[in-house]
Image (cartoon, rainbow, N blue to C red):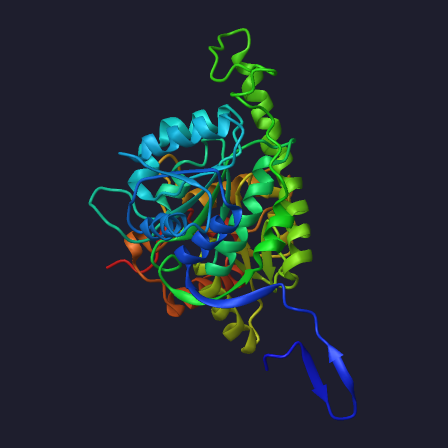
Length: 415
């Protein structure tokens, strides 16, 4: 029905509000590019890398077609892309880029510069394995490998969440209590190239949501001169880093506030973690990214069989929602953390290390914990793998004591 009214045989025509969103069949990369079009950053500097290329390629088409008034700069490397974005953001405009894998690694120096200068840059990162050997498929070694670079990190489960996170990231980064860059993660090929129905908000709704950018500093404002990139030695460097840490601490509150505002225009609710059947769960899986959807399905099947299992999806990787995780696992006997990347400093994946630190800080008796590494280099995770983890946790929680459980890392789906 194309009319704005709906005919009811017993009543007068009822006027319908025009929807604030429309559904489109889009890949994750296309959904992120649409979010960037609606944000309309003044500057985008980019270098193509699989599986991120579609984001900047689609956005460059919007520029070429005159749909956005963005200065699109094609540079010679990812290091240059982030450097150009730093200069643009320091001049007081919204600036963005996107990357993946070795491109993110090449940016490493400038990632710290961006956060240290308190520049509210937003960057989608399509998670992909790092070389060597060369692999173009999904894991989280790139995304988690830079978690100490001072950026806020949001991880997306699907194309819809990648679109929504990208829009929210702008307001999170620009909040005066935060002023830090934000990475929006999405799984390479699994999310970036899979086509789903995505609810795109109307351009005007997004424009009103984002509002006018009010930069904290402007390098090009001669009436209010500022110094960007100063030398800070023993007398002041520590204080800069302390302020940066305070901004990251404030981000937790701001992420929740922006999510509440976003729910008002979209109807979609976001939290730093999402919990599923954790209230009475004896065994809980904690994971992030696209695997959360598969784990949720595995949970539903086991729940139908009467097994008390739960799931926690971590959306906000940095700053890590330690308090929320502690609350969610408070009644569980055993917990498994699934990581799509490896931690080489300590046993267990990086998400496992964050969860373990959070539970250790509680002061109480933590549940039995297990670390699982899965999906490296794009290897599939199957329902059978998740069933195996849940059943192993239930066996642990009923038949064993914490002292009997080895802390050794377990690998899912290896030959």
